[in-house]
Figure (cartoon, rainbow, N blue to C red):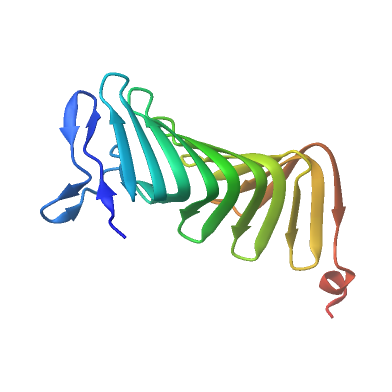
Length: 180
């Protein structure tokens, strides 16, 4: 399998995802590695397919297909999408990453994992700057045998908090409180 790398224009400056020393480690740059590229210079769009790997800073997104809109710094990814950052993993059917905003919207069969906290939902938003994952569309979050459901559930990764918005229901393991 042959992997291609894109040369991108960001802010009017030619940026290559690879330098002689290896990947450029700026959070402003977006690198895309794929099996196949189609670059439309007139529309400033890059269409990627096959083993798509998008990296910006410490976030990596893997999928089967992707379209990068250079002017908007937006990437739409589909097909077995995985969003990874340190020990956080979000999987879904589709993700839209807004590079300039540090936000990733995920839809379809969303599964969230962070340490021993797990969650599912129809859709969600990962805010890279605030380090939060906001789940909606019948979200459910659990840790060990404790379970939380609600209209909207937000996991604050940085503060190790789970917050609900709207109607919610919690089920806590009695063993936890009785010392068993």
